Image (tube, rainbow, N blue to C red; front, side, top):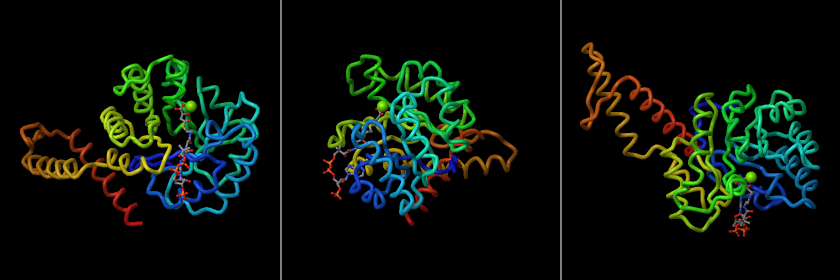
Length: 285
Ligand SMILES: CC(C)(COP(=O)(O)OP(=O)(O)OC[C@H]1O[C@@H](n2cnc3c(N)ncnc32)[C@H](O)[C@@H]1OP(=O)(O)O)[C@@H](O)C(=O)NCCC(=O)NCCSC(=O)C[C@H](O)C(=O)O
Ligand SMILES: [Mg+2]
């Protein structure tokens, strides 16, 4: 079940065909796992990966990590069999690639029933229809597919992601308007911690809930970037305390560190503390 206080800092892709990686993920401090049947699995491996994934998920061992199964598109030769298999798997969410329109979600739901669906947002058509896709009653999450998007838009890689910012913003607006989780795309250079941190900070600043990852080495940087920092926690506590004090005096605006604090800031502060507590509880096991 998707809940708003639950953290989604790190969302790790694992190729559904790799038993060693599937096993290793049980020990990694990630908030969610995307068990992939799409791009990370070759055509020859698809059927075996599907069976391996069903068996692995049935065995369990993934604890509180959200279990997301990414199927192949329904317009591919594997999509329907993936959807039928995913419907019966021990998973929380089904992730549909290259969603262009809400009707794509309807087509999957005809096979998978009322199982929550996340949409890969990675095509120009998807960007233009982001609000309608987010409004679909079964959609509870978006994952940005920045590799496919860059390919479709014929952009060049830039560290500041300027060519992608419009698309990222459209997905964020749509997701926030419809209370949908929104996860940033992957950072391909998995040995470049500095570049990853820069991109995580940008994503967090923009309002993403977390980032999708391709390698265990990316987990720590990402978890830190998307968790409330000690400074943010301290400020949130002081804002709440200051506001409660002036509220008791019948006033509506406090001042902390030279900046105003109104009830909307207090709501954000309370949300931040709830997330920090949830992360602490997860870490405590
Ligand atoms: C990138 C990799 C191919 C690198 O693999 P490898 O060379 O095996 O890495 P290491 O030797 O450094 O691995 C060390 C140990 O970690 C495990 N491992 C590696 N990757 C993962 C993982 N993703 N999840 C869990 N565990 C992992 C190895 O098994 C080693 O374990 P051990 O031997 O027990 O110590 C590889 O990381 C990889 O395949 N990554 C995933 C790639 C992927 O999923 N791609 C598709 C998603 S990206 C995408 O499609 C985004 C979107 O659609 C878009 O359009 O942007
Ligand atoms: Mg993709």
